[in-house]
Image 1 (cartoon, rainbow, N blue to C red):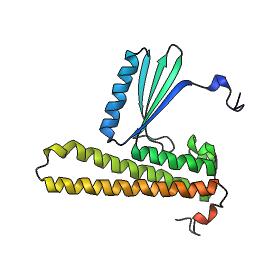
Image 2: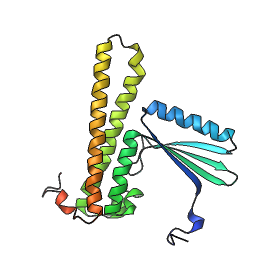
Image 3: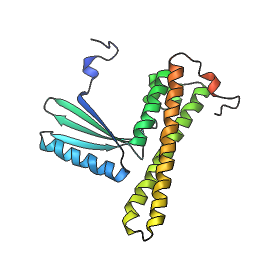
Image 4: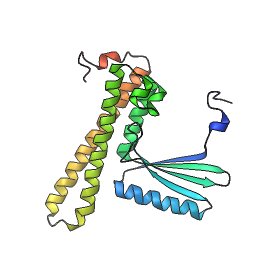
Length: 196
């Protein structure tokens, strides 16, 4: 009734849950598999784990669980802190540039070259966040076998510092896009070469 452009017969999920938590990639997958098992235990006919981390959709990375119950499908989204922060950036960018950027590739939406450059940079930001998380995952996997505690502590601190810097940078981008969404012209974001 509220959204005439989304008729009820197109709605797939009867329930949804988003779980954002500070985790490495291995723990994220283990948590998703555990939750899928628990959904089966409480009556889901199927609980399929869908991993969107290595092959993101429009830059979006997460793990989803689609659980089919007698009443319909429920979806659980599990995102690391960096995945969630990037999704926040892209959500506000969709408010500025159009909701279709969330569901289509850049060629399909036919955006201007300027918008295309901004979106490409946001997709690269998703790649950067993922690379940081892969590094963290590898480090965490070998952490217990390290001999030098000081070397380990140094690397943990370096990861935390870089991760926080990336997280904070994305928060700054959210603020910039929010100002554009609220009426500021966004074109001044780019210089003549389209870089920022």
